[in-house]
Image (cartoon, rainbow, N blue to C red; front, side, top):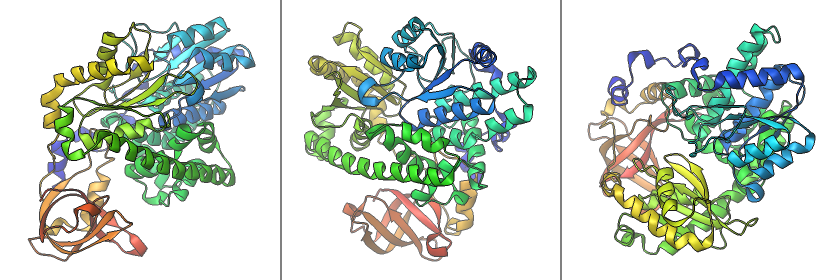
Length: 549
């Protein structure tokens, strides 16, 4: 069964053991030599170094990794700056450059942003600041005039892992920098190696949180980070985030990072200031880490409440969901409401995408500029950044700011352009009618035998990961006899089912499916297999993803 699962994901024998020696060599990342050379010069000259991050989990982990490693490498003046989402928006803007310049000349290092910051880099240069760009997003038509630009999307690149995320790029740069410093006698090779590998917990968190494709290179980074977390060698901040989320570091999985830890970290950037998130990841004192993690936990609770209210309003705007496919006619969903918070429109777009099966863009008012700030989420096969670019060419003079990648993007739009943009985006998305229609299919790894429904096999599957985007966790489907069912937590179904091939009854949980109750006596379930460790028990459990009949 495991061979079948892995073969379906095109895993080769060489990819069965994700470990650091199998990483794509760090020196092959485009632009990395120039980035290392400029960082070496900053160390030699004692320059002030400011890390300019982003307000999501990828940006926060990349910022913390850069700060931690540079300080360990002997850089004496290292600080960081995370742009205020409401004041500056995303990336190294001219306004962010002006804030960074307050401390005097030096070097700016962008993480998870910068490759499209033409005006921001130019403003930094005018203020006496050199810029090294480390980024994984797609560039615009013109590259910024930075001292160095490194990442997997640099034009002309043939880097073998194009899905490296922001913290992955930072890891590569720091690994190469550590080697160069050691070769020059400026840092102990052991100190450099220890500093970089100690940050693998941050790399794993940022990689999973950014939902980049888990190709073999990214699976190595996530697997190594999870090993550190499980062995108790993670940073106090990540340990504290696991604690407030009620998760056990000793049994940490990629799902824990994506669904429990990342939302708490992201909540700071959505509703407040990601500075508190970076500070949590930088904390060396466990007590301070716990205090900061508690703040992030409280922000996440506030975010969930706000998100639920906004999603309800968005769905009300759409009207009857049963009529949604006909009403949209395979177009994109584009919604705006004056009351929505710009920090959560990305989450709303994601939920609209899930409910409609189509690309979605949610807009909120930018309180600083008065313009509309939109966040887009797409479906497989529809490159949303390219669709937005094509739509904007129809309705604007090229001055609209936008950026992103295939599955997620953002833009800032004058309200007067919204109707035209909505129509142009729908027209562009219509080109993908067949792709979108095919997205209704549910792909599984087939049925399991009754003898496979064991905690031992669930653990074998978990160990074959880490699972994630473009390397999906195994999904199975069987028709089960439903023995018992009940609603728990107000919206979830708790089931007891029996495999038609016999065996003991098995517990199942179907999150958010209370409205499907009662199920038929025989129900075809699509499910993941996991271990239920509730109250010291150890049993197989089905996590139901869909009820087909």
